[in-house]
Image (cartoon, rainbow, N blue to C red; front, side):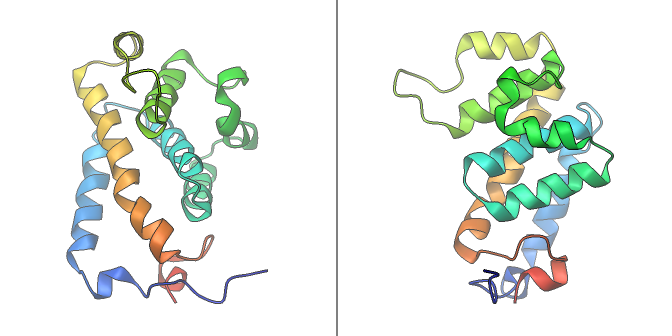
Length: 159
């Protein structure tokens, strides 16, 4: 059953600064310190973790257009045992999961996880990964509350 429309109309019509904020976040995470494919994989995982079809479809499509294989895209949900990811990508995916998944036994991002990630990323890259998680999380409320239509162009997703 296809949705007839989003819950909210285009939020930029009401808060035009959203376009500028989105552009600034995109620029900040596109600084070259982390491969865009890694950021895309991480953001896809974030969309999956928060249960947003819109974000999962959006980031899957972005990865596909960037030339990622269907195997890698499909395996993001089970990345821990999938053979398709580098150790650096696994660290980035682990960071996204740690930030977005409650840990009943202590802090979400342990010192061990941070140390593992710093083996693959310098301080600028770790900051970029952190901002990439924040970038997708910035849109989570709009995705879950506004419920834009997945797989549609920007002009058609908010109806």
